[in-house]
Length: 321
Ligand code: ATP
Image (cartoon, rainbow, N blue to C red; front, side):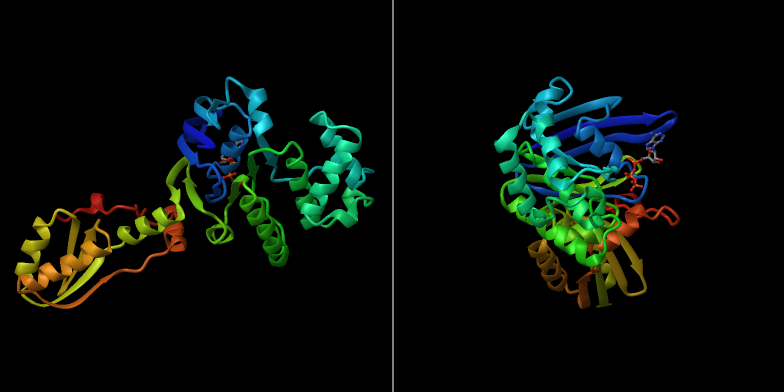
């Protein structure tokens, strides 16, 4: 596991910004960390990058206890903050060489490393430009090149595409994907799920200081699918259907409306098809049988929409049984 954080707690005065947050970023993952404004992303990321101390919890990076070994940990991490500083009168090459010197890279070796990284982020032509004259997208790529100077295993980026236009966002995403393919583990945050859903191998959704759902894309897609009810339309023999459903071990909830039954069912597709077969075998005349479609975007909106009644990922609490 590249990054493992458990039970993180962080308060700002009376405000509980992180409330027992857990996060697992496997080796080689491209982990998208999503949540609405104020959910606690920056706080989490600053803790992971060793810039902020939590009030409680543990942080392990590549197996090391990050709170015990902050120096060794920082060698492993490259950090791209959510804002770019002001660098008056500094050329791109000077900027890069300055950060190289912070990692004891000097002279020809430093220049070579800086040049390679600038080429990697598509800024090789800009070496002699002043940093402040670069476009926002270029500054972001420069920041990325800087974060890679010491060849970190884990790259942590806080809302790197905020304020970029769609085309520049796309270019940045391509660059991030390339870095991941070259072996970097990447943790990237955004308040826009759409920014990350297609890019990432893993997703974690944070809300009000807690991780609400996390895992590989496949796991999450499956969990979302099974969190949606199966809608069964019965033409005849409703009572038989109800008897069978109430006794079924994978049925979590049943809600009946007219001739329609909404079933919270925690089985996979094979088990779904078996349920249908069992209903038919029990003499129930089934007219319709389908999972209500759900996708990551609707789940994200449901989780993070506090104005309306909260929809949870399991239907257990609404059990009609
Ligand atoms: P955004 O997407 O808006 O950047 P975020 O998910 O990164 O949000 P954080 O910046 O981690 O959220 O902030 C979490 C909560 O803690 C917010 O409500 C914020 O107002 C509060 N907060 C953050 N930093 C401080 C601070 N230094 N002092 C007091 N409150 C803070």
